[in-house]
Length: 147
Image (cartoon, one colour):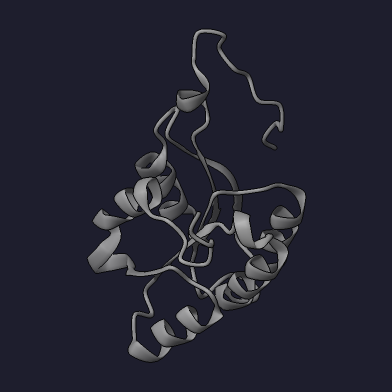
């Protein structure tokens, strides 16, 4: 079980310490480990929580705020599209998370369904995984109003 206590070094300024918090929603243990390695960069991005099912993901969203959701469509129970819809409703308009779909089901139909639900990016696990880190670090949600 992960601790919710966050330790901060006094010598880090806030811009460095305030990295993006990711909720990783993926049911493959092997891919989860790979994605945590890929996406972990102290001070910039961290996988703050994980979920393997729709209900676990919804529970995590209600317990904590995340900057980024990396969502698989096919989960051990439920599906990622329902999680995307719920996240868009849970977060206020000025604090919408970046939502990145990472799936093996990269058809036009599935992509359109994900965008309609509120996804910002749609990436194919096999073809686009190399793009994921850049999107997570620098991407912005189109659902957050411009200031």
